[in-house]
Each structure stands twice: as C-alpha cells, then as structure tokens.
Image (cartoon, rainbow, N blue to C red; front, top):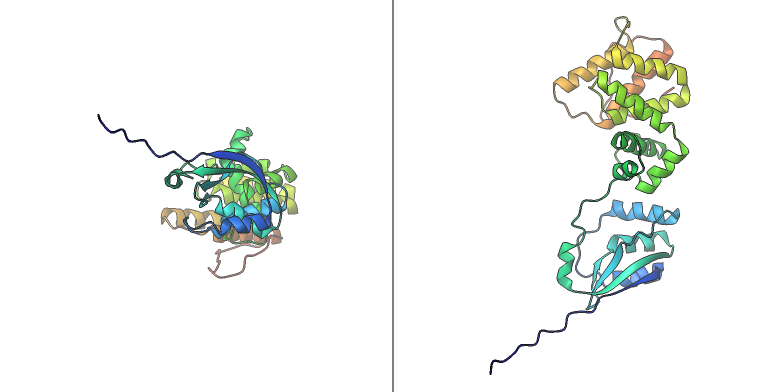
Length: 273
C-alpha cells in the first residue's frame, strides 16, 4: 500500500475592519520585521490626508502573516502614529509570508488618473499645474519638495476652478510655442491672473505667437531663451523656467526692455508683481 502524504493545513485568512489608534499602529509596527525601506515623503503625505479627514476607506488592507509578521501597511501605520488620529482600516490576517512578494506590484493610480476618472479635460496637464500651484502656495517656489496627495490636489481644484482655464491656456500656448512645459506655463498663468487678468490674457497671447513685438521686448527675449535651451536639449529645472516667466512678466509690467534673462541656480525666486 502506498503511503499518502497529508499536506499541512494552509493558514486561515480572516478580514475585519479595525479602528487603528496611534498606540495600536505603533504596536503593529513592532511586528514589521521584514519589509522594504520606508519612504518618508509617502508617510508625510498620508499623515496630512489623515489629519485633514481626507483618508478614504477604499478597501486597501493592512496585511499580516499567520505568524504575526506585518506584510503590508507600514507607511499607513507610520502615518497614523505621526498624525495622532484614529483611522478605520481593513485588516487581513493569516496570510502566507511568501505572498508579500506579490504585494504593491500594480501600477499606482496617479492624480492625473483620478482627474481623468472625474471627466476632467486634459487631466494630465491639469494635474501637473494643480500640483505646482499647491507647491507654490506652500512656499516651495522651486518645486523641489513634496507633491500634494490626490485628495489635496482635488481640494485645491475645488477651491480654484479657474485652474481649468489656466490648463486650457497652457495647452493652447503649447500648440504654437512648444519650448516651455505646459505645467510651468499654466502655473504662471494662474499666478499672473491673480494680479491682473487682462494683462495676463495679452501676455500669453504674445508668448504663443510673438507677434508685433519690438526688438528687446521681454517676451521676445524669453522666447529666444526657451528656443535656445530646447535646441541644445538642456534639462532646465522647472524652478528656473518659472523664474524666466516671472522676470519676463515683471519687465512687461514695468514697461522696460529685457536684453537677457538670468537666474542663478541658487538664486531666490522672483515674485510676480
């Protein structure tokens, strides 16, 4: 008679919703013994959404192995502890340790994807402009810091629906003049509109077509600079391109010519006037 081998019983998976307090999050993090490195920007972004009450209960779970090891959720738990708030989360236990290799393997949904699902026109450009305006309002004038979460970007768009108009202008300008990124053009349009709506209309019409501008006009100088950098395939930082637009705008507002546009790498960002 052949001997039959009885397979070991597989772990029993269970799922439940739990109100995760900061103390409970810290306790569970002590079971985080085998995981990837923490991304601090993600923790800070999650914490901001949790503090603001924008954290969505979307079915994504905190996951534990049958032996108690935390497999997935370290960034969310760190955010709960940092924010100091209680967040209701789905918790799954009883998984096999090997399943950790398959977690977070999909493509992350971006703000542009969320805007597209809402039916926004030019969702990718709108997302980029909204993010840059949010960063500018946080005092990140060089666009080097943390980006807003999808919830923060959506909230800003709700507060400032004219960001859609700035997106339209950025897309139209790009059709005629492709040497400046749409995200920077749209951000500048939004900021300049806050100062003088009528002057902003004329400024971006001339940026797009360069028509009827005398030699030495700031907009012609900007166009020449942007064309030169594009032809040389230079990777110009977004903050420097923003400075170019602001220096041009200020010169136009002050009625002076502009022979060159200079912006030191470490120089302060000019403010639009």
